[in-house]
Image 1: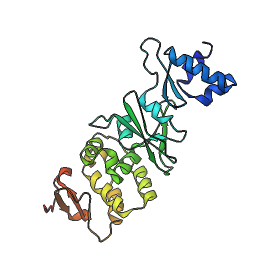
Image 2: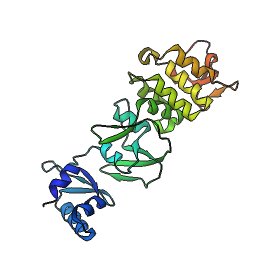
Image 3: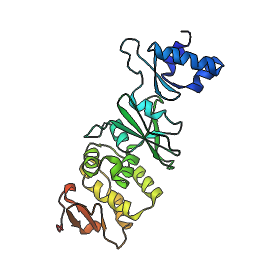
Image 4: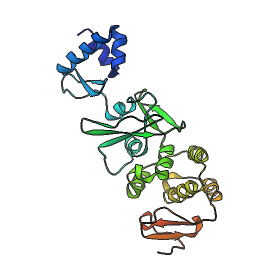
Length: 249
């Protein structure tokens, strides 16, 4: 029982943490097994535990906290980051954690924790008094436009962006410069232009995006009914909304 107070303060802990606390791996394993049987703690996955509320027996850590501590260098990304920022339409029973090294996906308390391998070091924010790691809203937008499927599909992505109120165009440009993909500048510029009444990005931002466009005409999704946007040299799904000079194909 003398270790409960330490576990309550840690909230989330791994076997190694308790080994450091007790000084002996066998003692640590014995304590964890005993406390788990008494419903003081719950095993999230092998060697990873969460402290339980004494009254409700619910985990004291949120799903976002649990996700952020699976890997030391892991962080919420894509649609999971949108969920953290409360910018989403659909609630998914899964969270995506990006980190340089893959881990085996697992399910705990009806939530699937999925691994995404990423070596991108930019705009990873530590929030909620250090409890949660998540991509900035700007990186979340750029990453999700880059890989729309990881954002839950185009319709869900548009819903997410429609709920974003404040962004830094410098941070968006930092991510675009890092990826250095003409098509990404093209997609990001066009999609964000549809929501600029709320985002208030400058003409300079959109001009930078347009300056990166190559002569090749691109499609956001060839499988959809598209309209052609000559300003952006882009075929876009009708779901994004009608624009000037549109040609339905």
